[in-house]
Image (tube, rainbow, N blue to C red; front, side, top):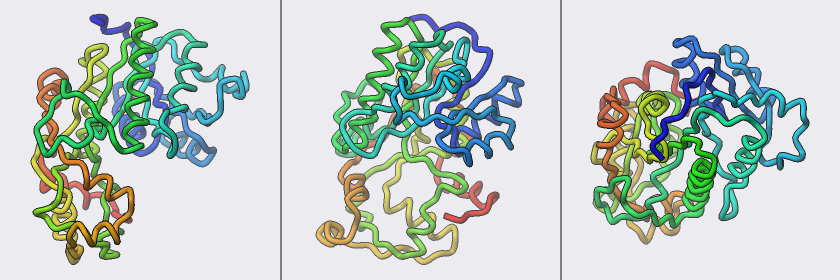
Length: 307
């Protein structure tokens, strides 16, 4: 698809949590009205306090179960729509994305849809440098659900000639988004020489990329969102511990890790890849504020860390 989509007059963030609120502040500074969809009244009140028009709607519910009053407030015509809702925790499909796309079909089409996905859809690449043309091979269930959502959104966009842009992000870190609790509890990590290559992006640089995708992203295009710095998971934990004057977590071998680490952590440890972020830099024009973890951690003491 070559079309870039019509100009947008408003911003609607589906799943407006921490990243959504940071993004909303940027768009409000540009004097665009911003709405946010959340699941609870408590979250809605937080949005209201920040000048974001809230809409409470649970995407686990099928469209036919949602009241017409709620649906009438889901105004997507000429809107720039960001979709930040995580998939369900179980199953092979993302029913939340399917429900959302059904809701959109009952409305006038948005100007464009930007979906925040994960680099996990690439699966294990044996530590190799990969770009957006690398074939996907998601293994972890969470990554398969993300890939399902990617495909559903892309197919929907093609069928309706609506621009859909996919951002595949590495691990997101920043103020309030560090594993300090895990480090303080001294949960072990794998020996550094056994640790997989991983990818990171500071939350502020992710917001930059989300902003750039709205005006520079090409319809149907996929963008890897990463700082491009080479690192591994154990180095990540150790650098954070050092920076916050905490003892480094104990390191263990694979045999011990199989006994002591969670299934979720083990699934991360079994995948190794490095993301090429050239398309993000050249097409979206993102100039990273935090091109490596050491510089990114300096920003994390500017806000209270409770993690």
